[in-house]
Length: 374
Image 1 (cartoon, helix red, strand yellow):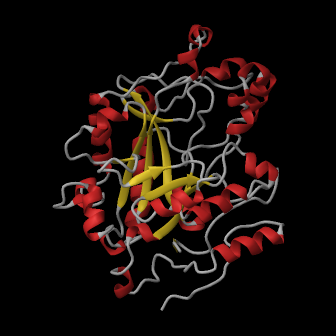
Image 2 (cartoon, helix red, strand yellow; image 1 turned 90 degrees about the vertical axis):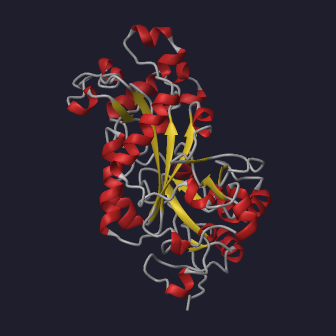
Image 3 (cartoon, one colour; image 1 turned 45 degrees about the vertical axis):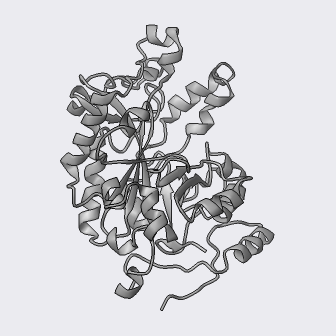
């Protein structure tokens, strides 16, 4: 039997907040990867679970010299490019999965069809002692590279998409029948050099847009690491029904038991309309409720629309965020986390499954992996 527990699923010094949210989620049932009986596995729908995801999951913190340099020019960068916003980083995937229960990751994928496009880090041109060129041979080869902002925020645990996928695959093989991992693929479509001739003159690289060939190559790279049996694809979801939402209306979401040990790929970003026309696509995409083949909704800010999302969560899996741009950590602010919980969104993304003690004790997470929605 499942144990129904009242848990403090977040950390806050404000006892009033704790009591209020505890009342909201008093009926949350906590479970772990191994705690299901076979009978329970067969009765839990995939959209009835809640997981914690990391945001820009591959990313390391920028070098302190880079942050210091960028901060000097903050007034010229504009509010949307505040260097504070990129001052965070993540652990390697194995540690995220095993030590913090992360079951969702986000990968910023940069198209590099000829190779060498991203082998230099141009902001280091202005930093004494920092090398511009990445010597790893993979940066010279064609393929997809992982970095947040070209030439500016590029420190990463995994230089290439292949590296990141292999790390996820290795962990998955070692943890058979794990709760499915949701892999958010963001196809990057813009870099600072796209907006600035001056930066292009200094050697900063423009972003290479995604086209049909790029998306074909993206599927090929994914398939080179994960077999068809590893991936839960849109065709697996739809089955013999005319669309994903037709299947949901007729028989509901797949049972969790059908998805154990699997990975889901979900696309967002540049020119994704091209990919949506693919026949038998490997990846899902973030769509809208009126799209009959939408299974996942992206709502990065749940504040003010919690009731709307609560209703939508019966038919869709919703991804939202509990924090953004280091703001919540710097202010020890749990309001977005509270909102995410209240919205009943199933995938909650964070940069703080562990606290950054430079600023506060702010961190979020469930006690066990995953939790069931209300």
